[in-house]
Picture 1: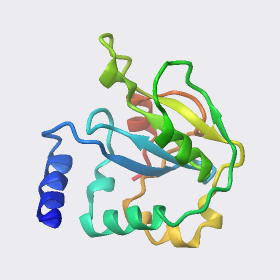
Picture 2 (picture 1 turned 90 degrees about the horizontal axis):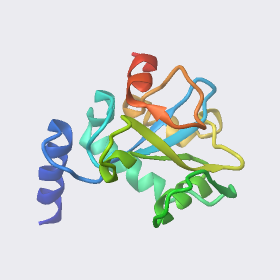
Picture 3 (picture 1 turned 60 degrees about the vertical axis):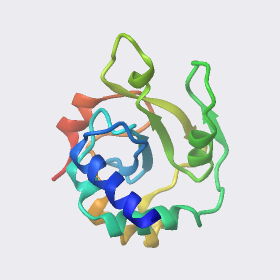
Length: 156
């Protein structure tokens, strides 16, 4: 059953027990939106795992968003970055935990793509419904972000 598998995966995401692809949405100090691909490693605010039901609804909502922005690739690393490009086309800064591929860990999220015209939470009334699971940071998205910096700038 798909739903039971989803619940089991969610439990692993919440507890950090397994390497599972897990992406979360975040807001910066000027209202811009980003997506962080974690592979369930690195810094992950507790708020993002507050509600499985809301997470599923947010995921479904994300599938309905139209392409609004030209994506600008920031990474120079080789790889297939279609998912991050798609996020940037939707207006999100697109980050990845590239440490999962590194031997020497940098303890950061790498910016893969950024949108030419970023989405802003103020123009997204539908996304505001999910603010209970979207972390807010006192920094501005656009560059690589250290896990420690995210943790220090997280607004409670």
